[in-house]
Amino acid sequence: MRINGKNCYLVQKTGIQPFKRCMYCDRNVQECFGFQFFLIVVGIISLLLIMFTIRDLPILAIDITILILLMLSFLGYIASKETNEIVVGNHLLKELNDELEKRVAQRTKEAHMVNLDLQKALRIKSDFLRNMTHELKTPLTAILGYISILQEKQLGDINEKQFKILGSIQRNGQDLLHQINQLLDLSKSEANKLTMEEKWFDLDKTISEATVSVEYIASKKGINISVHTDPNIPSIYADPERTKQILVNLLSNAVKFTDDDGKITIDAKDEGEFVSISIKDTGIGISRENFKAVFEPFKQIDPEKSKKYGGTGIGLSIVKSLVEASGGKISLESEPGKGSTFKFTIPKKNG
Amino acid sequence: MKNILIIEDVEDHLEIVKLILEQHGYNVLVATNGQEGLDSAKKNLPSLVILDVVLPELNGYEVCKEMKNFPATRAIPIIMLSVRSNPEDVETAYKSGANKYITKPFNLEELVKEVKKHLGEES
Ligand SMILES: Nc1ncnc2c1ncn2[C@@H]1O[C@H](COP(=O)(O)OP(=O)(O)OP(=O)(O)O)[C@@H](O)[C@H]1O
Ligand SMILES: [Mg+2]
Image 1 (cartoon, rainbow over the protein chains, first blue to last red):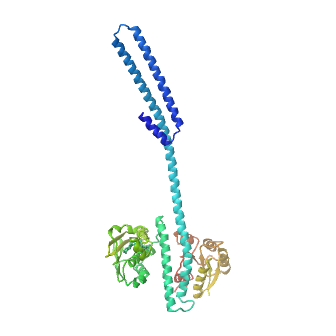
Image 2 (image 1 turned 180 degrees about the vertical axis):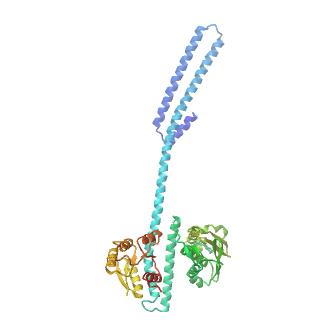
């Protein structure tokens, strides 16, 4: 009975037609009834035979014989019923199994389709992003180009005030370009498609180029930037543009999260196979529980403060991807209110 | 005075490149689609070509290949300019025969420097 109950439950769950279930039950009843009938007939015949052939046996013996025969027939009935149930159960199980296999195949196919859809969506996203950035860069090229032409006074003289305004437009344009490129890089790093163009270059020069790009804001805030580079550092084999991008991101964070009159120190050291570069600031700092989170895309520690400081929270995630793609590591030391030190390494020679 | 042909469909980009090159004393020819540019290159045989990638009619890669296949224009240096910065795009440009690939937005100083370099005018 339990088997049956269980089967019925499964039958309902898997949706085998109720019609089929009736068919099994009917057959079950028919077969059981046939066997039982056979046993009773045999029992009565044996009883009659015993009674007619051995009349002089005591009543008790006859009773025992009848009892044994009845027990036998009952056992036979049970056995037949159980065999029947097992046969029917097996049959049901096989059907269930087939049904389940079909379902698994169906679900696997569905999962595969979802996966394909997902891949397609990701591709559409990165295609869209790429096209979008191209569309953004076209007008930006015109804006920055015309500004340069005016700044170089090629079309005539301009006064000091106009020159300053052009400088502001240019910086804002460059900022916009930087944001566009970061967005493009984020989508590339998501797709594991960050590319490196390695060559021999002078680290000193790259550091000073990166410093120049944050100098304007730093000087506005009265922040002093000092650079110490190990004189032993030879030229290294890595991607100079990417190295500069790492430095610019770390430096712009340092400037952004350091209050007026703070201090930023850049230290480049020769560490055998690696060069290590650290950027130390005297800014607001980061608490230990956020050390990991700050490297995640779109993560900003204090959303309220972030509005004041600006940015989208992708800088450090790109920095981490870039450092790792160039075979180095990045680490963070910081204490709230006491400043932060970001340190990364670059292999001297990868090629 | 050396002739430089600019093949560019974005009006403002064309204007900027033209302004800066004229400022540096070059004579500028212009074309605003690929086919027109290729015809002009074959006819005028400029000293250098500045070529955009995305162009109507023939694209920049095709113009580049055609010029490198045509004996009279084969030796003319080609500087390609494009907003596309993917390595595949850069590679396609060099495979098509470009002498230099510069991504937009370009730095005017860098552009002039490359022009001079490919004209053999480096100081
Ligand atoms: N030098 C630092 N001092 C204090 N907090 C920092 C510093 N650098 C990063 N952080 C924290 O880590 C967060 C993530 O930094 P990240 O550079 O990824 O984003 P962002 O600077 O806010 O925006 P974006 O870089 O996209 O302009 C910052 O919002 C800030 O909370
Ligand atoms: Mg940042």
